[in-house]
Amino acid sequence: MKRVLLLVPPSDGVVIRDYYCSKRSQAAYLHPPIDLSFQGGWLRSFGLEPVLLDATVDRLRPAAALRRARDARPDAIFALAGAASWPGDEAFLSRVAEATGAPLFASGDLFMEDPAGHLAELPWLAGVLTDFTSDELGRHLSGAGGPREHLRLPGDACVPIRRTRGRRALPVPAHDLFAGRDYRYPFARHRPIAGTLVSYGCPYTCSFCITGELGTSMRPADNVLEELRTLRALGVREVFFQDQCFGCAPRAPWDEFLDALAAAGLGLGWWTFTRVDVLDRTLARRMKAAGCHTVILGVESSSEAILRVHRKGYGTARIREAFALCEQEGLRTAATFILGLPEETEASLRATLDFACSLPADYASFNVAVPRAGTRLRARALAEGLIEPGRVVMDQSGFEPTLPTAGLTPAQLRGWRRRATARFYLRPVYLLRRLRHLRTLGELAGQAREAAGLLRNLATR
Image 1: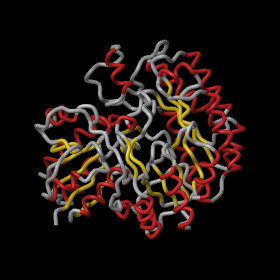
Image 2: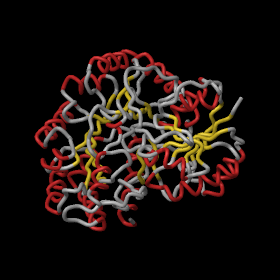
Image 3: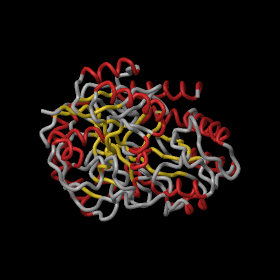
């Protein structure tokens, strides 16, 4: 049986690389990489043996990680890489390919614009996978053959990323490989945790996000329920549904899934992303009845003009309504913000920070705009000369801002992100709110760890 090493490179600090996004953790959280668990399921379905080496969660230094990779004796490798950590990832992955002699395939945000170019420039790279829900890598490695739309190999023509569509069932991901490792997330009330999704891609095309360029597909309800029963048997109690817009139109398949999940009585708690213009009272109640306790809502900015330019499709009034609705229905909320879009000024940043502190949000994530590969924002940044064409290293967490704006330099943005995080989280009224909403001792311990990580990053970065 061929052995395939699922590989997350080591990193300086905690780096998250998954779902074509990479960033440094703003506190201490790290969830299992969904790309690897889903591909592990496909590899098994083709009679291959996946084995895991996550050097980030295991806190391995490069030399130790290299020894473990070599000792695994893989016949092939599927690795994650990220724009936030690319110099280190590139150096490590090239050494792994040389040391093992195994063909190394990769996935990551930086490959989503020009995989053919990366394959031509990196002699150690055997292929790039641009859809982690695809079976093409498993077919290729098993010799099953068949058409290729999402697995790019050396010599392939430079063509746009293929958009997914329709409904499709997937094999149960290889969640067992991730069990027992130190994955954690601030929203989780219990451990262990796992990540999955009901839908892939997103029907909305926000300028700064790659998922709107992927198309959309959805899994049947019974296919997801089979996976969730497997997770429960593994002892998992909390699930991160990484759908980029949970509950989006058409609503009927989502209602079917939520009703089936509620009826299954699995006792799973979970959290997910949705949009303020998708979430209504009926959906909120269905989600809560099925075990949801936290929703992540994209706010981005308090500037109506910035929201309009970047294709959000809603304004601040709808944002306030959604947060009020969640509070009424007993759902915790996390608000995400993007600082430093090209139109940003000091005045708009100050207004956004005031707006953030006025929302009844339980968490807030202040990120900086990055021209991620394959996005409309990157195309604009290149056209306007805001970044160099060869720039691939970038980190939305804000530790190393990339884009200048109409009135701010990257260095100024870095200071604003730190200021925003400190002001939001260090308010006495906020701290009291968080204490009131704690439900378990495990949650209290997790919150304390995340708080320590957040303060450490504020002090050192």
